[in-house]
Length: 503
Image (cartoon, rainbow, N blue to C red):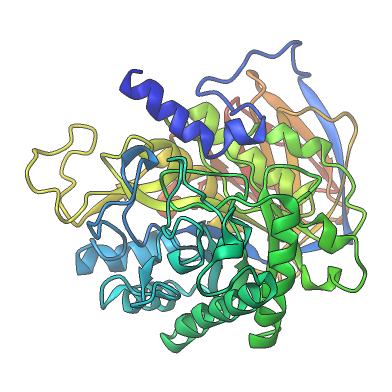
């Protein structure tokens, strides 16, 4: 198998193939019919929906091989690799405005104690660096989610899989009855495992790292050469019921998320949800939408438990970032907040190593590792020196526009569409100060006029325009003037999105 064929397979296995959903292509597909030249919407500012707490990102705070093909010993990571001035620029220019940092337990935080039971810094400064990043950027806290538990708890006694080994918890392995420590006692094993999970939370807190969310397992179906651990739905539910009470007891303010698999049925956590005595252990239902078409949220099914739903991993696994994917990301965020009523939305990596095969589709920015001193400048990133970083504009313009214009604890408001078109989207919210913002986006291949009744008499709105290649000063968008009236009618070019903010 050629390298790029095997790379595509490895990348696909960690999201798209497992989910059964097609990834949005590098070049957008043609429409089956022409878009209308204009459309009408009504905003209802006095009909509030969910509170939008803020956006999240993931941090590569330890190394992973290019193409996700293993765990190198090198400490290639951020903020570790960045020069002091570049760290400050990273914190204040890219991360400022995000609320949550997704921390991959057993992957990007994978140091161990001597018995390999508990997570520790893999180098002395690792958690110090994360604390500095969180404090300097003003991030509320981490979402600790395990890719793999520490090796002591695994049947194969290591983080990784995809090699025929039993990549699962020891208590679910074939030979657990003969286990020299637990002798087949699953309940005792899970009780000890739960205490170990709590110990990891205690380690973060002792190092000054605030914790906002906790998740038992990233993608519980996945068996990979990077950190992973497979569960069946019954195994996941049994383990969750052992561990989640320890998390609650440690800090009831930490939001417990589940199950970060790929289906609206949430089949791994469903046994817990179906029992009224245990469903309260779950705060949010979380799905992975890696690279999916924004349109999938338009058909979101009703969740009978009424629990909030959001996605916490979005990236493009195969192929580069592109203008078409930029608009797809914009509309994915808009649809999740307006139609999916999500309280948050996560991109995956803030930064990826510039030379990594997956970097373009995964990252908001790219950095040159500190040990990358033996090659000339990358011609794609002239002047990028070891320890420096730069923007990955198509991903960053999409996500960064919302980081700049959507304050924490804004509240979505009701919108009706005369005719729903998946390429012409709208999202409306009130900022904490009560001012209304309307977001519009157009990927219909033609100019389009949006007529919308604002629900506000005599209000003035200022427009800020974005395109995949244009984001204005400080990524605030290009100011395009004001519109006033009960109904306003901005005209958007193709591959354009705009924020209209009440003055």
